[in-house]
Structure formats: C-alpha cells, structure tokens
Length: 387
Ligand SMILES: *Cc1c(COP(=O)(O)O)cnc(C)c1O
Picture 1 (cartoon, rainbow, N blue to C red):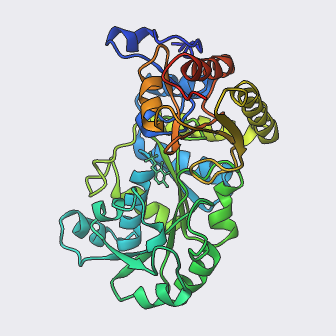
Picture 2 (cartoon, rainbow, N blue to C red):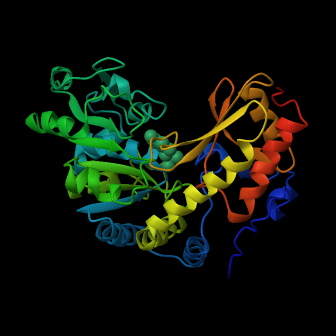
C-alpha cells in the first residue's frame, strides 16, 4: 500500500476531511495540537503504512525501537510514548517506582504512598497536571519570577520522587537553569525530568539535556518539529528509568495502559527521528528566513501596519517568525476569527491586542504567497486597520 502525501494546495477541499464537511486549515500559527500538530513527510507515512500491515510482538518492537532511538539520539535509552504529555506521566510513574515490579503493581492498584514532584513556580504551565495523572502531588518551588537552589532543596522531602524542569528560552529569566537544578537534585539523589516537548530545533537538544547536561530524563513531542505521528512522543535518558516507564505502559496492564502506543506510532517515530537526524538544519533555517522576508515585504507596506521579524517562536525555539502590529481596526481576536473562518481557512498566532504572529515552519512552499495575500486582503478590503 502506498500513501499519497497530502496535496499542498491552498484549498479547503481535501479528500477524506471534506467528506465529513471538515475543511483543512493553512497553519501559520505553529505546531499546535488543536491544529493537528504537524504534517508527516512521506517517509513517515510509509513507515506507518508498512507497520499497519503486520502483527508483531509489541514488547519486542518497543525494546528494539527504543534501542535504535537511543543510538540515534546519543542517549543511554529511549522509549516511544503516545505524546510528550503521556511521556511526562510515564516518567513520573517511573521515578516513583523504579523497575520494581511489586511497586509498579502497587501503583496500578492505588496502594502506593503519595509521591511528590517539585516544579518551579515559574515553570507552572498547561502540561504540569500530567504529574497529577501519574498520582503525584505538585510541589511548587520559588515564586513566579525567581527560583534559588535553596528553594528546590527546601521543597525536597522523603516523598519527593522527581523535579520536573520545563525547558525553553521563553520562560522567566529568574528561573533556575537546568544545570543548577541538576546539581541540587543530585545532592539529594532526586531524578530530574525535563519537559522538552517543543525544544526541537536545535537537533542537539535530543542529547543536550540528558547526555550533556545531566538530567535523568527528557521528553519530546513526536508530533511537533520531528513531524512524526501526531500521537507520538519520545522519552530519552537513564536506562533504568526508561525501562520503568515502559513497564508502566501498554501492553502491560498497569497504570499507563491507557496511554497505548501502536506499532504504527512506534515505527512512524523511528522513521521521523532517522529523517530528522539527516536533515540539513542550516538549510531549513535559511528557508525560514526567506519565508519571513517574503511575508515582511508586502505586509510592511500596508497602511497602519508594522511587520517585524522575531528571533524566537512562542515556545522559545530558534525559529524566526513575523510579528504584525497595527493601529485601529479589529482586535487580534477578531482578525484571528475572521481568518480562521475564511476560504481557505488560515490560522495565525495571537501575540497581543493588535498583534499576530506568522510562523514559517508549518507552512508549505505554495502556501507562502497566499498567506500574505489573504492577510493583505483583510487589511485593505475587510475590517482591517485604516489609516
Ligand atoms: C506540546 C507540549 C507538550 C505536549 O506534547 P504532546 O506531544 O502534544 O503530548 C508538553 N509540554 C510542552 C512544554 C509542550 O510544548
């Protein structure tokens, strides 16, 4: 069986989605789950299609795929999960029980003590509740702006099983950096789990948090820049913890059984990481600059509009984007709603009251020009800003 890649034409009519009355979206907003994350390249689609055609022993596949992914990402061990958020759940479970089969079973039966996971208050964000799903309590450290090493040390108790560290250049400058967190946690023998879900690029982050900077586990999204299956994620790091994470999950009838990764996601993610390692990342960065420039030209000529390049995207990654500000006219919410309802539908990111962002990395070549045309049209004819 061969899959045809999604035709990249700026039309709202795409085959099977259309049959349900669902229209495709041109995505200049970013790799958001609510917009389907990212699209898979043909090599990933093909790996999933091949995997779907045969039965295999899932544990054997998980272990073999984990070994390959560990090699590719220069880590001691790796495991495929059903998304980075699921990876956080399994990692916290792993830190709670280790590989002890009795403790893993006790956890599944709700008989274990209540574990605690420390999170800097400046790191509290929408994925932190994954800790609770793993049966653990979230213990805040520091305040919303700052954390000192003593804040982490002071939050550690005998029930502490891990520190969850959120990676990203967009977080508060006063957050305690990973290296300092690793030092304090190591003094108390507490593992550090890094939520690195959106921290690709740069590709080096696949080994940077763990093998280089000493965190015990890092968790990545398979469905963001890796362009693997949308429902996939990657846990990398310390072999005993990665094994424990696997033992908590499907096909084992344990607490993580609900977070089932299929053979298709496993093979799709292996193909995606192999592809990612062989990409010319410099060429990609140049391509993004070209797209941002191509947008900036016509959009900066619009009346009452300024268009400027930004170094970092909303997840703090080194992916440039174009920020558009305007004076008067619709609010950003109104413009975003109009664009989302247009034909074709266009998704852009909210930046501020009269400011939106366009990201180049989710956009196909033949969508670049239509995007600036659609936006220009809104400002010139629609309810856009007027001088
Ligand atoms: C996207 C994201 C997640 C969730 O990743 P999924 O693969 O969608 O489960 C978790 N944490 C952060 C910081 C993210 O950006």
